[in-house]
Each structure stands twice: as C-alpha cells, then as structure tokens.
Image (cartoon, rainbow, N blue to C red; front, side, top):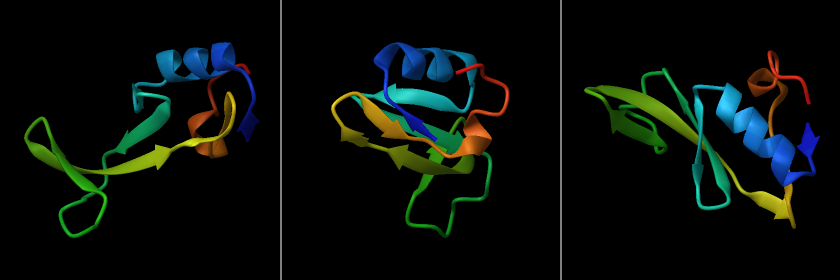
Length: 73
C-alpha cells in the first residue's frame, strides 16, 4: 500500500513492533532465520531478516499490506 503521509507512516511504525525508523527508511525486522540471507541481521542473540522500505517520493512509502493488517490508515 502506498502511504503518502509522514503522520500516517509514523502511526504505522509506532503501532507495529516489527517496524522501526532508520532515517527516512522504514525497516522491518522479521523473525525469520536470516543467517544465510544477504539481508540477515543478528539481533538480541538471534538471526532475523531485515527488509528496508525507502521513500519512493517525498513522504511516500510503499509498504506491504502484511505490515498494515492491524493498523487503521
């Protein structure tokens, strides 16, 4: 889903424990075994997979729907 508002994106990140900010990039840290993947990260003693969602335009992010399932946007 295209999110075209910083306020909406902040709400989504705040209400989803798998999401965080890295500058203006939204980062999803998923509890998948990331040991053998190029986007694997070691977090809190275990390997996870990190997905990064950069801004596609000014204050516009394209975020997969699975991260928006429980958030009212």
